[in-house]
Structures are given as structure tokens and as C-alpha cells.
Length: 112
Image (cartoon, rainbow, N blue to C red):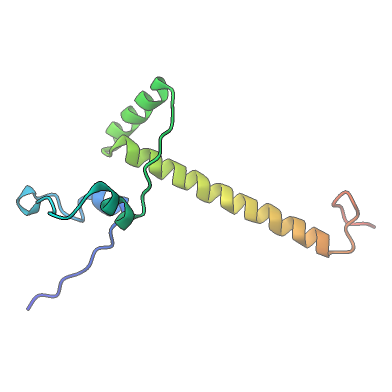
């Protein structure tokens, strides 16, 4: 009796081949449609206008990295959003600390 290991679905697991690449095991689901698939993996279709040169740049970068350009764009947008949220959290935390510290004057400096 073999014990199967569950692989969590992710862009990285798909792109690396962990989820499989053998065409022998591929088939189209009878009850799958795009919206069901998107819902299952948490994606939402959007429309965005980008410069043609930017799209070509992403396609070239993606090809170099061996992934699809839309996957690359999702990864970059996700990293950017995560970094910005972290930066915003630091700024807010610093502002709250200054606001709650009576030694700070109105210019955000410690009064001597």
C-alpha cells in the first residue's frame, strides 16, 4: 500500500511540474468551465490596457524563465503588493508609535 503525498496547488507547483506533465494523465473535465476553474484557484478575469512593448518585454522575460507571461505578471504584481503592504504597515506602525509617545513634538521629533 503506497502512501500518496498531496501537493498543494500553486503557480510554482504547476510551473515546476510537481503537479505533473505527463500527457497520458491529462483529460478535460466534463463539468469544468473557466469560471469554475478560476473560482477554484482564486483567480478573477480582468481587462487592462498595456503598452505593446511592455507586453513583449514580459513575454521575453517569461520565455527566458520558462513560464507563461501572464503567470510572470501575476507573480510580479503579487510581490509588489506584498512589499507595499509591508512598507505601509511599517509607516503606520511608526506613526502610531509617534502619536502615542508624548515626547514627540508636532514635527515627529523627540522633544529635548
